Length: 148
Length: 148
Length: 148
Image 1 (cartoon, each protein chain N blue to C red):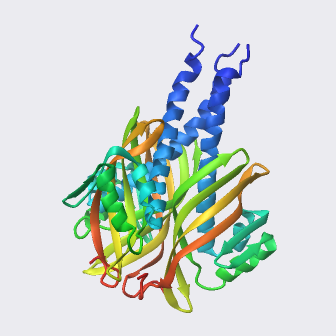
Image 2: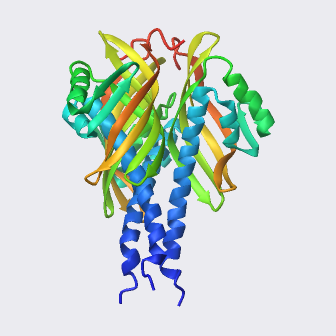
Image 3: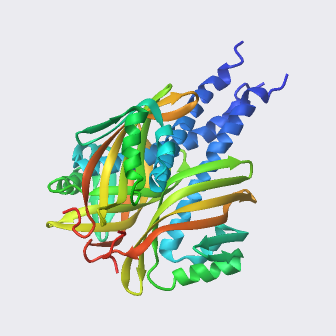
């Protein structure tokens, strides 16, 4: 008799739920670190070969990402709020999509941003990390002008 | 001896968590489809007899819902962001409440909307769907005017 | 042979997931009650000795909290939206951090608020409650002026 039998299926289902929970917290930690301008923590949330892409630009690997996040941390830090998260887990890989609203200051002007992230996640050394974030911008406009 | 005994309670608890996870993703998929003006996908998230209600209007069934979502898709698509989700699961039925903020464009003017959805969900053919969404609007105003 | 062995670890993991789920819903219920100006419900979400702190002020215990929430309920109620929640559970205690955006009206003027809550939660009589909410305000400004 296989003693694992009664629990093996349940354990696998629970592991998927736990993975999704950790991945949602990964994106939350991302928001906290952006809001605090903590480039070190941000980079640590990405795989060594992790990529962030936006419009026609890419920041590749920890060195490339440092350029991006040091820049964001140099002035008034953006305040991102992530919602609407859908995640598909496949073993130690996962993909996800989530919405984001960001309060920014660009050259002294309050900007408001709305968009979606398309993410790829990978479990490395027991931790879920970003393998890739593709940021699709719906609009990135001065608050006073609005999104029309 | 009942071999199911040790795991039956755990399986039932896990099933509730999984149902809530899927229902949260249902509302996220709703936001993605609204943002993309994808009326087909939106309708497919509702039961055949599903209802969306707002203020004193109702859109009933897939045919009625198509009127609503084709309209939303005809211009600049709204960008909804859903949060604060509370869900009660009872077998293949569930109720929930969640907050929503929406970035709209109405007649060329940036509008901002805040409200709550009161939802009823039903599991049909293995998938959780909207049986009913009642949208309570706190305010729906031009961004330049604000909500005061 | 210990019949509990195969399921004990799984049950403990599931209990953590359930606790986090209930705590997220606690913060959602908080938002609903604030939006409705329901001070009784708000106070009931806190431990008897619960604390809310903001800037250099603290509201302590159900009596102190009533002062805070009766005030919020006296005019146009704030509309908070909570996101980006990270939670650590340790038995019947937990800590968490989450982001919040709030639509306010102050003296007839539309205000927009962004910040983070640092929370402590405690399980009392089978229910997770707020033991403490520390509200860090990023900005609290008239919408027309923005956050620059």
